[in-house]
Image (cartoon, rainbow over all chains, first blue to last red; front, side, top):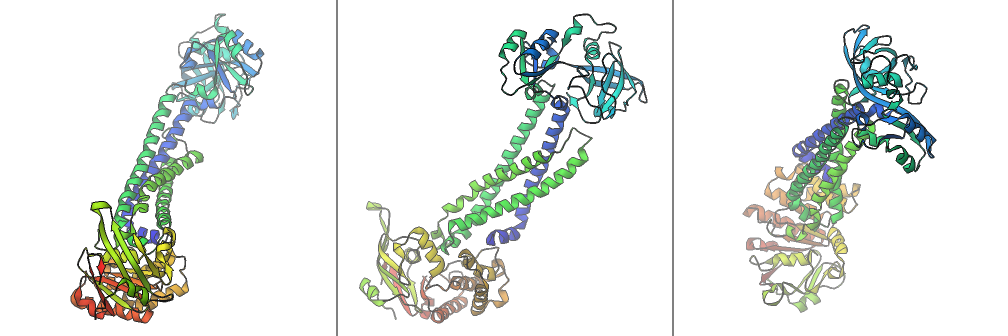
Length: 375
Length: 238
């Protein structure tokens, strides 16, 4: 680092410009990571929180399964008896609109992502406030996003179309969302009223239906037979995320932007150090003539690259974290240490790769060019 | 004062360990009709403390002589000995180490590093060799004083005059106490007065420190300071 540090100090203007570019990319990296995580939370945190390994859908529903699939009682009974299945139970999913008809926010329109389940099933929520679900009482447990609208435990919501009165019995004070809508947990009968938009007594057929079979499978369980018998298909929980409205498009857009960002940063760093190394050729030739091994010069140059990248990335990440913290609550944004470490780490690694390609030119400099007129 | 040197003389001149000796050194580029002979059976012996000037027009092979003597280039045939070691028998890596420890270069444009102060320029060769200690720092200060740059020790190259840069380049070359000092057109960027001063300093340091010094130049005005002058024409040394 004898030369590298002195070059950094001597050409500090140039390195500061370069560092500023890397720092800005790091800021963008943190913000994109936070936004991607926030969008993922808004899209699928409700599904992620379910204690299941798989979901079995009607085999005819190959996309947007949660709105297209319907399964029957026979299906979840067959699943629960199949080998390799620890647990199988009905799960209902629907989007519903409602209005606050009793409570401080009377008249407020509320969107609900309704998850229906048996109140005694492990899928049922454990509210941090109020009580849990109770069969046949039309009570719902809301989550933070709905509570943020001013809905409180004890309020009554009236669903559009079915006119079902939904009493808020409990609150899970966490962000639990599906398709950017706050989740409301309901018992299966209440869910069916909301799903079919039917007031009063449900027809017999509707009472035997759900959206999917929520499954807990043993690792490596072979469920081909039961899939065939019930005309259903078991998707892993992670695979069902793609069925959430907009999730695939959002996450692939974010991945694309991030990919471009990393590629651009590697190219920018590579281009800068290419120009820098070419400028240094007139100094490298005499250094080699004086007996500096190529390895010594390469190590020095790489230490300089890493110092610039790490310094700029640390500054940029800190700025990104400050900006990101200010965004939480105002935008779908969530910061996780691992995603930020990955983003910043990738920036440093790919920047170094770009620079390594550039400083390899040092190897090709011929010490002979130090003699004679400056060439 | 011009003493002709032939292959035989060169071989006979130096015995033992010190100095620089070239025997029958030939350097050709290309082959067949396109072959160019840069050095043609050159023999040269320089004893420790001796200051030899090599003059000749550009293209006569002066730079090739320095390149081969300094281990930057392998001759096509012939041998080079430095301080008793046969440079031409060493591997590339060993030659690099030999350059670092036994050979000092003073370049035409001084070729100082832009970001380093004069003092740091001198310390660099020893840092490269992993020998940067208190003795090295003391030696740097002593050499800076010897070339009259004490008041400039903290200056960077762009703050120095051409003459000062050349003196700093000389001090840097002497840092490793080299057996051989190779000097390439030291006065090309200097006016007449400064040239004379620079060469005088070079002669003084050569005698004082016992280096075998070879200076190539096309400036005949500075030859007087040398102990011996050879002329180079078409790759032949006379």
